[in-house]
Length: 126
Image 1 (tube, rainbow, N blue to C red):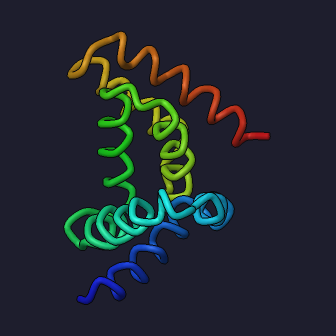
Image 2: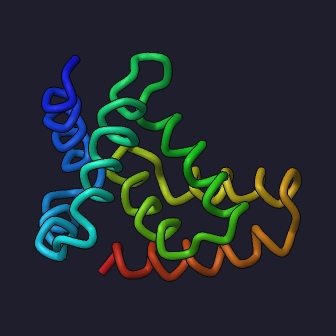
Image 3: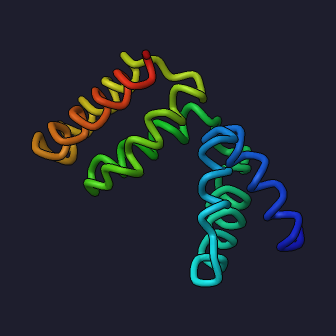
């Protein structure tokens, strides 16, 4: 695949997982300083990894939630809680992932992640 094909495939998956509104905001906020970064994440994260056949999107969402919760990346976690719902996870399944985080990454990480997820799920339910 060429870089352009990876970008196009990545943008398609990115839009499916995160939603057009989110991606449109990210693209609209791109300027000369952030263009290369937006290109990188679209080609690499979305075009190389999220397009692979080895894991389905639900599983990728579970892994992503666990890693983001563990690393305390709250804004990205909120974004990926919404993505997980788009990928078919239920709020209960999001909670199960965060319980798993509590055991393997620590209660403080899970506590923080539950707060982020709870607020995000509340917003999504409105």
